[in-house]
Amino acid sequence: MSEKSIFSRILDGEIPSDILYEDDLCFVIKDIAPKAPTHLLLIPKQEIPRLSDASEEDQALLGHLMLVAGKVAEAAGIGDAFRLIVNNGEGAGQTVFHLHLHILGNMKMAEGSLGF
Ligand code: 5GP
Image 1 (cartoon, helix red, strand yellow):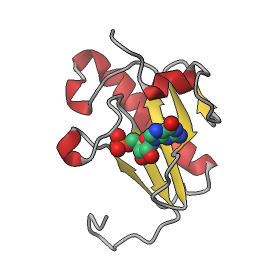
Image 2 (cartoon, protein in one colour):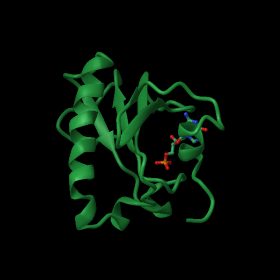
Image 3 (cartoon, rainbow, N blue to C red):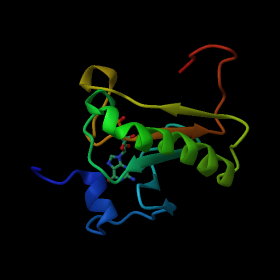
């Protein structure tokens, strides 16, 4: 592996950020530049650069992230209304190439649409 990602450096305590949740496979921090009143990042410890780089071997991990997202949203008080976003690739706005799920809540969401 080349250089550690910024998220791995946070996990290793090299860059300060409160870790709000952690288990064997993933961890959660607040986004440094929130795009919604609640904006969390759920990050697998394994450095998969993009969702499209994940493989069959990562299936259990990806499922785990979904389940944790729901639990973290619940704990953050947005369990009934949250949005998960994964930006895949530069063209989609990805800036950190270590897979992460944005968990967004307490924002005004367009009804029944992708409205973001
Ligand atoms: P992306 O654009 O790759 O989907 O999302 C990367 C996110 O990471 C951005 O929303 C950005 O604000 C956040 N971010 C970048 N650097 C840091 C950092 O050092 N600490 C935290 N907490 N968030 C970061």
